[in-house]
Length: 179
Image: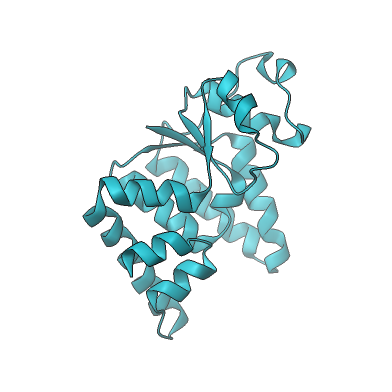
């Protein structure tokens, strides 16, 4: 399965690390465009000085780790597409260019299922997406989530109980399934 990861699911660290960890385990193939990655980098500016630099380093690591994940939309594809927010058309164009099965996003309103279905695509929020992966490969997803939880605990220097961490990452159903 190929999934385009929208910038809104790459920006939060815990969520991104779980998504990328599952991809590294071969549970799905991640896709993104240069513009999606740029949106992620620019979104980090609000975190303060140096945050964008850190994000760009993480982006470089992702590009190296998943060399085939970055897709460019075909010439003219964006002009024929319509979404409620024209600023999201590039995400749909990336999904088409990458022959994706779905788009993983929190932004349901701007990616109507009927419009996506016309292109042979679906949309899932990250909790739905990861819960489906967990149902298909419970041990692999549990190992990824535990590694991310342990790293969050190490970095914060404070206990990070699983369910509250998943809730903060906007993954309550996955947290419940794993808890």
